[in-house]
Image (tube, rainbow, N blue to C red):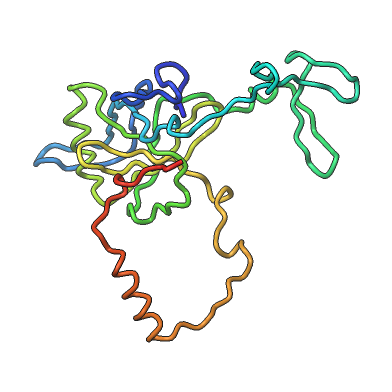
Amino acid sequence: DAVYTGSITAGQTGKTPPVAPRYVLKGGLTLSAAPGLKLSLIVIPVRAYAATRASADVAFHQFHRKCNTRIELRKWCPHCKEEVSNDEIIKGHETSKGKFVFAEASEIDDLRPKASQTIDVSSVMDAAAVDPRYIERVYYLAPENDKSASAFAVVRKALAGRAAVGHLAFHGREYLTAVVADDKAMLMYMLRTAGEVVMRKDIPAIPAGAAKDEEVRLARRVLDGFESGARLDGFVDNY
């Protein structure tokens, strides 16, 4: 998925990943790199590269079996029994069964946050505190140019084992983000908020069951037989 329309292309393949326009990593971080050197405010121009490829999925279109012509999906009003154009369509949110609140596209646009090219860091936490259930997408962050490489390296090393959490607004939505160190680059996690994550307490009760020590030891021996030193990058999508 593209972070911004423009230089990022959804589904782009090849050796060079999709590239986003530059971001600025900004926050009230204080570092003492050497005696007498104190950075009370850090602003680093960076570029974001998609860490996954949507093109790995197999896409199918619909065709008419009789003539192999691609099917058109038209917008149809069952009440008026007529096809409608985009300028005849308004948005509607269902507040309760069969009841809707209607809004024009312009009204919705007025409520959307303005796109930002700044990742505003507001908190730093242990990297282990970033629950995988919250991670929606992942991007690599790299210095925008040679001039920002040194400052980038300083923050990357300072972030070891920690996550810088902040917000970024784009495509009409504000995203919670977490930036963590990763070898020579950094990773930016686009995070879901708590309201989007289903926690274990929200699912039906899980029967406790009883685990006997001998059965657990046997299960561990079975699992030990599957240990092979395999890496995740060695697995493929057989479909």
